Structures are given as C-alpha cells and as structure tokens.
Amino acid sequence: MQPVEIENYLLGLLPGLGINKTRELSRLLYEIAKRDSLPLTQILPQEEKWNFEKAKTHLLKKRYPVNFKTAARNRFYLPKLELDPALRADLTPRPFYPKTVYIEESVQNTPLAARVREMFPRAEFKLTDGKTQVGSANFSHRTETLLIHREKYDFLKPCPCSCSAAGCGYNLINLGFGCRFECEYCFLQQYQNLHAVLLPANVEEFLQKIDTASFHQGPFDRPRIGSGEFTDSLVFDHITQYSSQIVPFFKARPHLQFEFKTKSTNIEGLLKEGGAENIVVAWSVNAAPVIEQAEHFTPSLQERLAASARVVQAGYRTAFHFDPVIIYDGWQEDYAQTAQALAQAVPADKVAWISVGTLRFSRELKKMMETRFPEGKLLDGEFLLDFDGKMRYGDAQRLEVYRYLVPLLKKLFPKTVVYLCMEDPQVVKAVYQNL
Ligand code: SF4
Image (cartoon, rainbow, N blue to C red; front, side, top):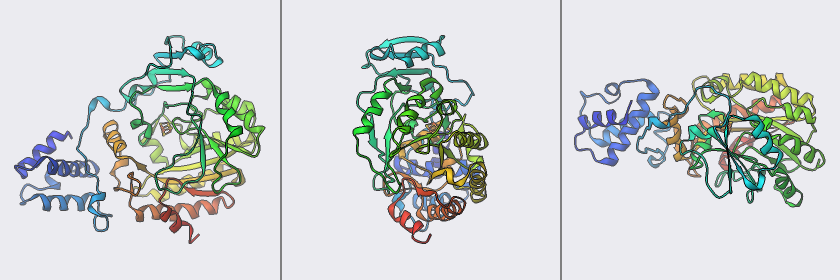
C-alpha cells in the first residue's frame, strides 16, 4: 500500500487534518494494515465519527496492544511514511563478483591486489589515490564495487556498544567494510552514504598495534579482540586470506583471545591453519524461521552448526550469538530448538561464550528496513524509543526473552559465559540477580 492511498483515505475521514497529524495517523494505519493484512476500512471504519485524538488513541491501542497502557506516548515513534521502490533490496541470488575494482596505488603490489586481479578477471580495474570516494548511492548495489585499500587510522578500538548500555569489554579491529549477505536488520544499511565493499591490504599493521595496546577484559578470563563490526569476519576470507595472518599471530599470544564472527561457512582458511583454544570462531544463530525469512543469502542453521563442529575438530573453540532475537507467535519453541541444536552439534566445553540480544535499531535504520524490505515481518513487533535513542521491544518483553533464554542456555552450557548484548544495565541486573 502506498502512502498516498493512506493519506487520501484519512483526508476523506478527517478533512483539513494538518501535516503532522496526517503523518502520525498514516504511519499507524500503514503499520496495522501491513501487520494484520487488513483493509483501511476495517481499521478505521468510515461509518464511525472520528476526530484526531480519538483516531490516534484507537490506532495506538491496535498497533501497540502490549505497551499501549504502560509506555509514555513519546516512546511511540511515528515518522513520515516514505517508501521508495527504487531502494527495494534485490534478493536475486548471485555470486559475489564486483563490476569495478578500485585498488589504491599504495597497495597495488600486495598479494591481496594480485589475488583479486586473478579472481575477478572480468571486472574493470582502476587505480585510485585513496582520496576519491567510491561506491554507489544505493545500498543494494554495494557489491558491484570493491576497494582494496590501505587503512591508515581505524585499526583497533573498544567496541562502541551503545550509549549507556552495559558493555562486555569487547575490542575491535575493523578488517573490512561491507557484506554480501542481506540480513534485513543489518545496521550497515544506514551507516554509510557511499556503498562498496572495502578490504584493507595491510592486515599486518592492524596486528602490530595489538602488542602495544591495553585492553578491556569484561567478564572474561582474557581480553577479547574480534573483527566483524562492519562486515562478516569470514564471508570474504577466501579472497582476503586474513585468517592465514590472524591465526598464527594469536597462536603465539595465548594471553589474548581472538574472535571471528560469522554467518558464513567459509572456513577452509581456518582449517588449513589449524586451531588453538584462544581463537574462537563464533556464529550468529537464530530461530530457523528468522534465518529463512530475514537473513537472505546466508547458510542455514544446520550448515552453520556443521561448520562450527568442523572448526572445533580442528582445535578452535566456538561461540554463538543469539542476535537479534525476534519476538513472534511461537518464538520460545523455535529458539529452544536452536539452543538444543547447538548443544547437539558441539561439546559444551568448546563453547567459549554465548551472547543474547533482542532486535534493536536506530530510527534511521527503521526507515531503511521498511523501504528495502516492505514485506518484511521484523518491524511488525512493538518497538519503542529506548534509553539510548535506539528502538527496542519494551522492557517487559525483553525481560521475558532473557528470562527464558538465559537459564535455558546456562543449563545446556553450564561453564560458558552467557551475556546480554547492548542492554540497559537495569535489565541486565534484573535478569542475572535471580539466576
Ligand atoms: S552477516 Fe552481518 S554484516 Fe552481513 S548482512 Fe548480515 S548482519 Fe550485515
């Protein structure tokens, strides 16, 4: 349904409605009609007499049945409805094959540049001075452009987590930007103006910084360093071969631990290197219906777990991230099945940590998600503006998720650290105080 249809319907019911009031009611009508597959006439019947306040209260009650009574009105976010069909995600399956490859002059003679030339002979290759910005304005076209560059500044940093959230002491190296998977909730969709895949050719410079850095440790036995903030850690590993540098580096530093975070099954490089207990290969996991409907192009849960079992056999430890947990009818059973599947796939003592986090997103990302995936179901839940300006399920719903999943996971993996990701410290306290 297009915004103009909704606005016309509203103006028929409430002639002379101002711009802001039309925006709020249109937004509510759209979200209810989409979630419940109902015509507008059944949501706001023409036979009844409406004024703005009555219509808004009626719609808020319908849109937020769980939170309407308890949440402050300013926590319902009702932005203008803008659905640009040109920005819809392209979900046609295709291999990663960039049309244009930019190589910065300073790294043109590196092994990575040579490998890329060999792997993508049909691409157009261009040298760049590193100052020109490359990429498309449309996120869906990001994989058409590949940039091989020298990272100069952004080597190592504490995880930014979320403002006022309870941090876990994670440390990040940003090995790459961009991903070829299409998760409907991916924050990269709204993070950059120009979209491309960026791969640094100077990994050794990232690693050099580690020996002189001081690290946060959080609740873990050693500092944790990971890649995978702005990309999937392994999705391009057959191209980058970063694992062939990272694994030997950390094998020689058992006082640290490194985490590859992935949804891929791209583990051949890791298997070739052979593992060590301080190198952890972590998979993001989810309920099977969420993977199928919202994590486009990614391997299934079974494929991820089979890869996890193989890296464990090769000497690595593994980890899992239940992130983002989605609430829908029957979520408990589906997530319990995922938890059981993990326990069957790998020995519990090889699971270094498990995180749990419910879906959260910025306001800008909400608009991007609904524009790129207009049929997506993720946003049908009840999301409220929260303590850090992000949108989340209400506290009671999040507590329900954590109070269900954390004990379940602790039972299956008694020695594993199970922690919450990007959560309100009050919520973390309420979950753990009764465990
Ligand atoms: S795997 Fe991660 S980086 Fe890639 S699309 Fe999904 S959420 Fe984004």
